[in-house]
Image 1: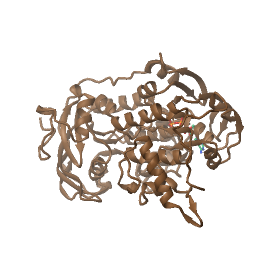
Image 2 (image 1 turned 180 degrees about the horizontal axis):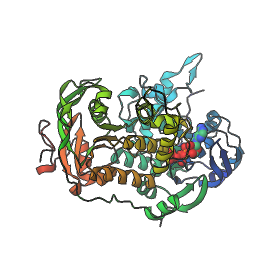
Image 3 (image 1 turned 90 degrees about the vertical axis):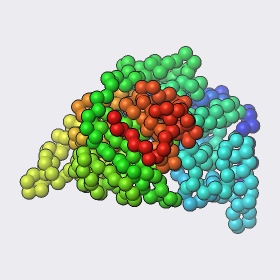
Image 4 (image 1 turned 135 degrees about the horizontal axis):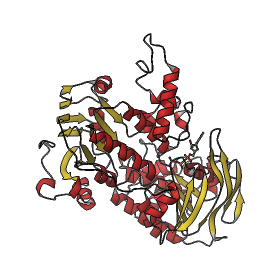
Length: 533
Ligand SMILES: Nc1ncnc2c1ncn2[C@@H]1O[C@H](COP(=O)(O)OP(=O)(O)OP(=O)(O)O)[C@@H](O)[C@H]1O
């Protein structure tokens, strides 16, 4: 491949009105009809959102368009021409690019190296690195991306890593860009930047954007057209102008959805989780620096912050996965070390990375529901033999209660859609009836109906005395669900805000280290303790 020079921001003449037409796409998996005769059309120059409940079939449909999965039947038309996409290379050759939820970057390579990986330009027999770097720098300048072509990808925040993923597709000349839940990991300002690029630069130059999202306010804000899928079927495509979150939610779920968490003020009791002057070592220096706060029974304490500011390490220290380098953590008044001991003290954890920590992907649903509990009643008899009937019954009850679809005790966990996998984990952790719940991004990738459901379960448990530590990159979720909000920035707690009075702007400022809101909600020293009443 030579260094591509095609300018994707130059308005091109297309052959057809539609960038992409799907005609009767059907995809059958052994247990589900993931796509059932789906037809939709995406215009050149437009931003087209794809919405639907967890497991509705959105990712499957997009993987088919990207050539990553063959449809069982149906036709794909790109710019007026029927195409047969049997692998992503063919989709790329047709100008289709895709940015997945889980980035596919190599941390130890530079931005340029990542962008050209697999499409290295040649000068004779060697790689034309200088030419590639020039081209990457050009693209960066053209799109106003705040990226250095020589930076190591592992050193970049998530928002910039995503831009590298986008650059990869642009470098290959993508004119139809598909993004699967692109804002799930972004801060509000990163989201704004992404949308400005997608709408005002990329689509405005005649290209087409298709993006999957569960965040309906975003969908309404950025899209021209919104298509909704339910149970594998296309419910309809509507113009974003004139639509509301309520109408969309109803199309998705088939009923009205409460978008606001319904809860009474917390009635905090005894201190359940006590974090005192905790320091946790990271790769470069302290990831968590002298952090102190308390979570009481019957309250939800939210931690807001841009990802990568020590929240993950703090959670790992609290859950016993990482050692504490300084300070002390007590659980219901007692110290505990290591995951087993921490769990035994009554703590449940909904981990942020469901694929790595939350589930064993090649084990069945039923097995995943009893992870860590397979050796005790009711799942094991007195001699240690597994009680398969109890294990199956447990899976049946939990999948029913938490609406994990498809209902199957034997499905491998890796086969669930993202949101259903998340519901499975929440169901398992809540069943243990913990005293302390550490919930990291508990509704990431979860649809609006399921968010309502998970939030209601957490509030219900709070009202029965559960102490909840909620860590979420989704400010709306923190503001809606938490009773008190702590903000983390560069490993420290830089502020506490009463959730009832919090504003997005105030939290956003604190999250980027520039907040100074004064008084109780202001930036405070890291030695100050929170939670004492
Ligand atoms: N490789 C597979 N094998 C079996 N079933 C699968 C496979 N991939 C997806 N499915 C099933 O197909 C259905 C649609 O899944 P898909 O991932 O497309 O949903 P989605 O709309 O993207 O959901 P989410 O919003 O939760 O990500 C689900 O029931 C899922 O379990």
